Structures are given as structure tokens and as C-alpha cells.
Amino acid sequence: MADTSEKQLLHLVIGGELSSLDGVTFADLDKVDIVGVYPNYAAAYSVWKQKAQMTVDSAQTRYFIVHLHRLLDPQTAAD
Image (cartoon, rainbow, N blue to C red; front, side, top):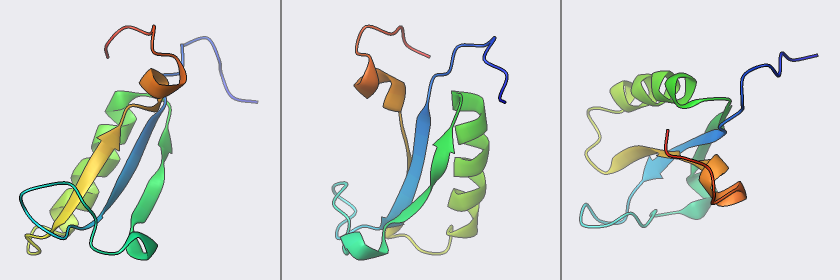
């Protein structure tokens, strides 16, 4: 069983090709890369950085960190 002594602040890493560089609308939702859910920002950032560096040659491709803990509990403090 996972160690629950540290509070989980869940973060989601997703990415894919954007329809325009001016916004955050994905070109094809069926091709969105749902990388995973991570227990804290540091873990999510590490994976986000790897994925972003892998796609550095594709200007239309972006990866994002979504603060799931803020959606699940809007009262939580910022990271």
C-alpha cells in the first residue's frame, strides 16, 4: 500500500498537437497524450519536462500540467 503520510496534491500531465499556437485547443482530441497522474508537482514536472523535450522540434505540440487537486478540492492551497 502506498505511503499516505504526505498529502497528495494530484497533478495530470497531458499534451498533444494544438490547432493554433494562439490558444490551447487540441487539433484532435483522439490523439491527446494522457501521460499520467502524479502525487505532487515535482513528479509531474519531471515527466512534463521529459515529454516537452521529446517534442521540441514540433512547434504545434505542447504538454501541460493540470492541477487536479485544485479541481477536486478548490479550498486547497497553491503548490
